[in-house]
Length: 91
Image 1: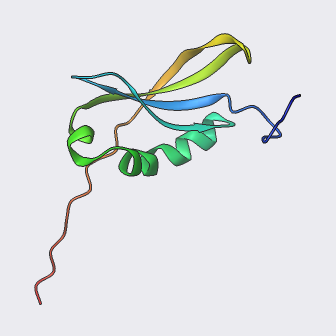
Image 2 (image 1 turned 120 degrees about the horizontal axis):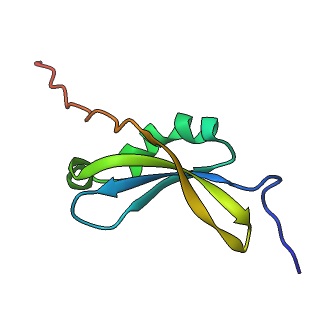
Protein backbone atom coordinates (compact mmCIF):
# COMPACT_ATOMS: atom_id res chain seq x y z
CA UNK A 1 0.00 0.00 0.00
CA UNK A 2 1.33 3.43 -0.94
CA UNK A 3 0.53 6.25 1.46
CA UNK A 4 1.52 9.77 0.50
CA UNK A 5 1.16 12.70 2.84
CA UNK A 6 2.85 15.20 0.54
CA UNK A 7 1.68 16.19 -2.91
CA UNK A 8 5.28 16.84 -3.98
CA UNK A 9 8.54 15.26 -2.86
CA UNK A 10 10.61 17.04 -0.22
CA UNK A 11 13.75 17.27 -2.32
CA UNK A 12 15.81 19.95 -0.56
CA UNK A 13 17.38 20.23 2.89
CA UNK A 14 19.67 22.35 5.02
CA UNK A 15 22.31 20.55 7.08
CA UNK A 16 24.50 22.08 9.81
CA UNK A 17 28.13 20.94 9.69
CA UNK A 18 30.02 21.01 12.99
CA UNK A 19 33.71 21.25 13.78
CA UNK A 20 33.55 18.59 16.51
CA UNK A 21 30.70 16.13 15.76
CA UNK A 22 28.45 14.70 13.06
CA UNK A 23 26.14 16.81 10.91
CA UNK A 24 22.62 17.84 11.96
CA UNK A 25 19.53 18.14 9.79
CA UNK A 26 17.92 21.55 10.17
CA UNK A 27 15.01 21.56 7.73
CA UNK A 28 13.61 19.72 4.70
CA UNK A 29 11.48 21.40 2.04
CA UNK A 30 10.02 21.24 -1.45
CA UNK A 31 12.26 23.88 -2.99
CA UNK A 32 15.55 25.62 -2.41
CA UNK A 33 13.62 28.86 -1.88
CA UNK A 34 11.48 27.28 0.83
CA UNK A 35 14.52 25.84 2.64
CA UNK A 36 16.37 29.18 2.39
CA UNK A 37 13.38 30.91 4.02
CA UNK A 38 13.15 28.41 6.88
CA UNK A 39 16.73 27.47 7.77
CA UNK A 40 17.63 30.48 9.97
CA UNK A 41 14.63 29.92 12.23
CA UNK A 42 15.29 26.18 12.29
CA UNK A 43 18.92 26.91 13.23
CA UNK A 44 17.81 28.52 16.51
CA UNK A 45 15.00 26.03 17.20
CA UNK A 46 16.83 22.77 16.45
CA UNK A 47 20.26 23.56 17.91
CA UNK A 48 21.04 24.71 21.42
CA UNK A 49 23.46 27.57 22.12
CA UNK A 50 26.50 25.31 22.60
CA UNK A 51 25.78 23.46 19.35
CA UNK A 52 25.33 26.70 17.39
CA UNK A 53 28.82 27.82 18.48
CA UNK A 54 30.37 24.77 16.77
CA UNK A 55 28.64 25.11 13.38
CA UNK A 56 31.21 25.79 10.67
CA UNK A 57 28.88 25.86 7.67
CA UNK A 58 25.35 25.12 6.55
CA UNK A 59 24.93 23.08 3.39
CA UNK A 60 22.00 23.34 0.99
CA UNK A 61 21.52 19.87 -0.49
CA UNK A 62 19.19 18.44 -3.13
CA UNK A 63 18.00 14.85 -3.46
CA UNK A 64 19.29 13.28 -6.66
CA UNK A 65 17.83 10.01 -7.95
CA UNK A 66 14.81 7.84 -7.30
CA UNK A 67 13.06 8.14 -3.92
CA UNK A 68 14.46 4.80 -2.78
CA UNK A 69 17.81 4.87 -4.59
CA UNK A 70 19.44 8.26 -4.60
CA UNK A 71 21.67 10.51 -2.58
CA UNK A 72 21.89 14.04 -1.27
CA UNK A 73 24.13 16.31 -3.35
CA UNK A 74 25.65 19.58 -2.20
CA UNK A 75 24.33 22.57 -4.14
CA UNK A 76 25.75 25.49 -2.15
CA UNK A 77 26.58 26.67 1.33
CA UNK A 78 24.34 29.03 3.24
CA UNK A 79 25.33 31.79 5.63
CA UNK A 80 25.48 30.70 9.26
CA UNK A 81 22.95 32.92 11.08
CA UNK A 82 24.47 35.48 13.46
CA UNK A 83 24.01 34.68 17.13
CA UNK A 84 21.00 36.30 18.71
CA UNK A 85 22.20 38.62 21.45
CA UNK A 86 20.25 38.79 24.67
CA UNK A 87 19.20 42.35 25.33
CA UNK A 88 18.63 43.46 28.91
CA UNK A 89 16.25 46.28 29.60
CA UNK A 90 16.87 48.32 32.74
CA UNK A 91 13.74 48.82 34.76
